[in-house]
Image 1: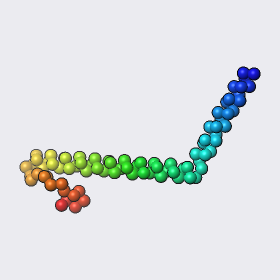
Image 2 (image 1 turned 120 degrees about the vertical axis):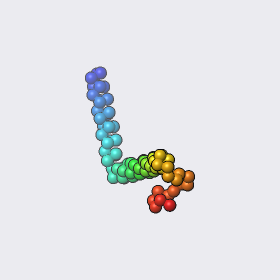
Image 3 (image 1 turned 90 degrees about the vertical axis):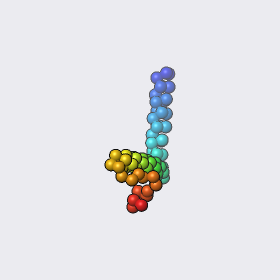
Image 4 (image 1 turned 180 degrees about the vertical axis):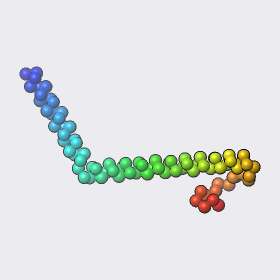
Length: 82
């Protein structure tokens, strides 16, 4: 009796697991996950670019101070240096 209950429970767990995996493979679910991951990656990329710009600005200020050049008191645009 307990053996039958065990195998029924294992079968139910496998059926639930299989149904969830099959539903996750549906095209609309795959597309939703892909869009979510792409948006997350884009956000991380924007954060990384901001960190790189800040570090470059700090390093440039440090080098200008070491060389005795004019300081960077203004916030210059990184694209064209003005």
